[in-house]
Image (cartoon, rainbow, N blue to C red; front, side, top):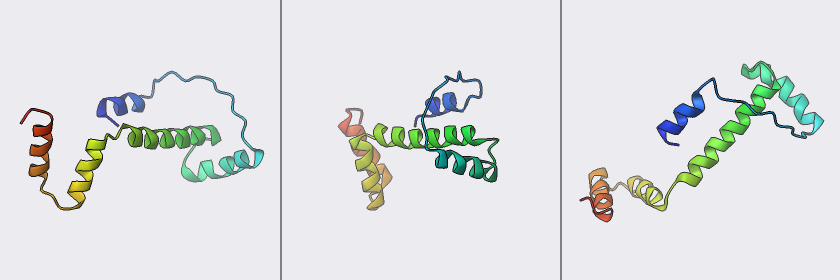
Length: 95
């Protein structure tokens, strides 16, 4: 996630919207039991945490371009980062 987007999401004064969601009773009971153990004031903040965590994960995965995947793969294979940067710049017409 881009730093600018992340900063917006970390603001405490974001507008909240009421959402109605049907959740199995046993799941709510588990959330109520786990929330204080994880430091949450109740099960709803824990649910928001879980939703936000999953959303950030998916946004990061979907924002990944084929080029960034290729760059990561080359780095894992030991290709020098300078060589990768030069190749990317050349490909983009700035090198």
